[in-house]
Length: 181
Image (cartoon, rainbow, N blue to C red; front, side):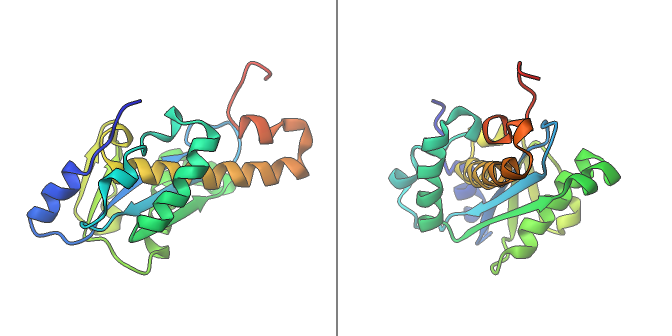
């Protein structure tokens, strides 16, 4: 497992920022379902040992993600998820829909971050300074935390949808293409 850290967050806090948040999306490559964007910020005083298992959500089992969501929620200053619907994705395209999900996660937060770390995407519409980081969910604990909360929230939604549309096996494939397709 690739270990993440809070080095970038610490560097930015040293530059005068007070609340650095990670943003990441899930569902962008799915054939069905919404895009979800997670927003996570940890306080500078957080005990990193508590967060040491946080990494890219794709590298974790569903059980590990569920367990880590609880740790993230208990320790994060900000922990929000924003969604865009299938209709919005179809109307505006996946990139704009992904950015909209990120803006919605920001809008839900009571606290406002003053700097963003975003996994491989730019978000000028946030109005905040940001850093786009390729493979950010494998580098930054905040971005990886955002990836995990978004993945768990989206997977939960797809499981609910599977009850209405049982033939698509959303509870199993979460809307992603599989060999069964």
